[in-house]
Image (cartoon, rainbow, N blue to C red; front, top):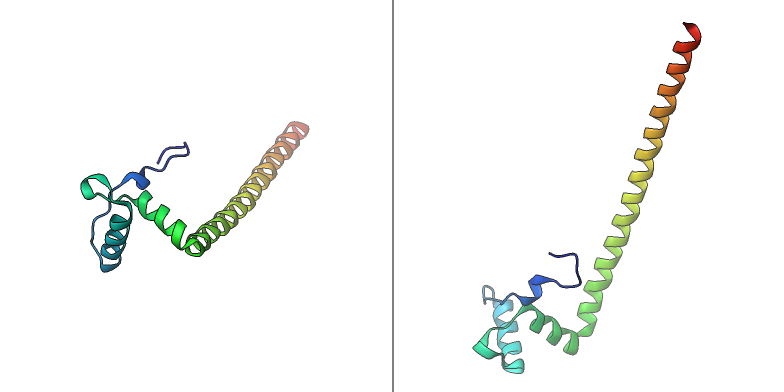
Length: 103
């Protein structure tokens, strides 16, 4: 996936591998009438967003909350690692000062 605002998964065509996918493909295909009868993930997302926005909102909110929690965990982990690094550096400096004063 690129760092831009594009998600290549949205352009993928969907195959009817499960009963739910088959139902979605049939419904979205009948509604959008795509060229070549190929339904993409983007077409399904757009249709669900239009007809069942509560579903996509719930998924998006859950994804946001999980991402936010992960970010907070990453910050805490980074702060802890930096604090440990600073303690190690301070300890090394103290050891070096003691070695030079005892020599």
